[in-house]
Image 1 (cartoon, rainbow, N blue to C red):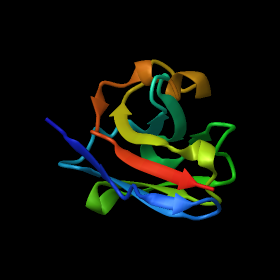
Image 2: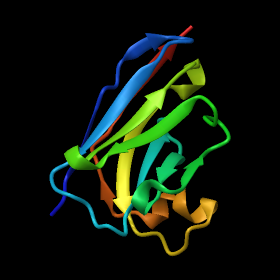
Image 3: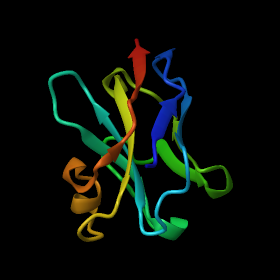
Length: 128
């Protein structure tokens, strides 16, 4: 079974940058979307960035659009999330997920209900 392992989380100051990584133990299905979620303690997971099979479509949440970029190195089975212009409200545990959503609408793709394969998470903390 494929395992996902996130890394790269850290404590940074507002305005800083980070690059998160999600390494898969083996190639994911060619039909899988790869998605980054985040969760603030006590709240539901929020889908922030998604990449389609074949890297042809990306979706971003309004809260991170134009600041975060999702990338994939298919040869190394690694998914990245480049976080720029970080804000204190970006503080959260970040998770990657893989799966095949029921449809390719933005709402479905960014919903945590669409995924069963998850990593353990990596913490990002942004201070003022």
